[in-house]
Image (cartoon, rainbow, N blue to C red; front, top):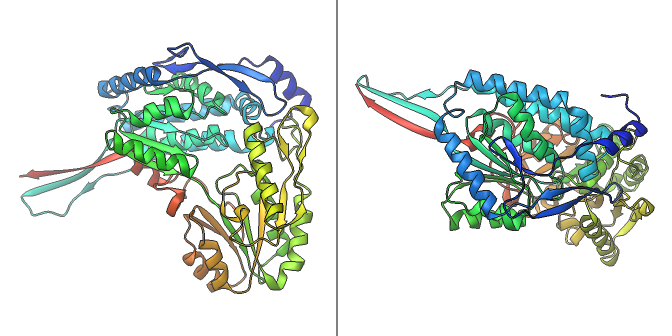
Length: 497
């Protein structure tokens, strides 16, 4: 961590040189059309930089460059041990430029600087490092054959990868894709969200400094309906990886079918249940975790514990503990290291969250904490962490992904009812279970239709654990060795001896 104060961060923000251009074949360049859009900080409404607004023409250039570079073998046919050394250097550069990257992240999307530096940057570097370290330790297979046959099963890089990443963890989600995609020898085109493109743009230069050849990693900022669509429909993109909303994920599958049947790997929405049984080992710890599960990163988290399911026999005692715990999560200036709740990413998202809070009132839920916009005088987009009690699973606030700090509390009377409520959703990204009963923990975890289940904690795991969802939360997995499956093709080579 750092000893920098709010004044230090603000001084750095005032002198920070911000790059907003696209990055193709090792150099920054304007969009072909010359078009730009304003990058506005949610911290205080200031305009940070004009960002290149790429479209079809830029996508054509980037894909051609990525394909040519891939075919040349300058990276794709490099020995895994050599790629590993470059990837580790890339991770080291992310660490070395950590304060700059954290400041860009905070100014761009509003998260607290302490989180940007202590969580996002360090985790991003670790993701690149872990994937690089793994790449020369993955072995292929020899099939069991007759004595005069040799059957080989090998992995090959898939080719050109387009990665479309979200605005809530721009740096980290980029590195979750870049780590395995680059380590396996592919060329990657990154399309950061137009709401938070700055760290993705900066990463490109660090990759070149690390020794990744020009053309292996290109960055195209711009809108989803222009450059995102162009990449999704491109006939020479082999794989499309995406983290974002379920609505867009479904459209990307359509684009893949309309073009070259490119592989599509999606991590989409969530409405994750956090289930607290009466026999939870520590109700105070569970309450504090429930507050953090919805307030962290302003609730702009795909795995946010947005549905708190509480056994009715303890509900009247437990909800006040959560209400008390949420008071320690207070919106503040994100450049203050003491702040733990920052600004929502932009005015559109803030208004969307406020509309869901109004929907909670309209549907008869009981507001017990928060519920208002605050710090309006700053020009920023801040909303209090909010808790509704008396929610049923049919209400909009319990069924739709809000992507903001709004918690719905739902009661239940049995484990069977808790599982039924938890699974009554189109999503299946994550869930948590709090109980002292080992059998109940295992049986409930098995019954939950979710890609990650945490027991007596919320949001556990590290790079060794796969991350992804069931149902309409997506397919494929980020993190762990399973992530490499998305970026490689399996080839069977059968030899007659």
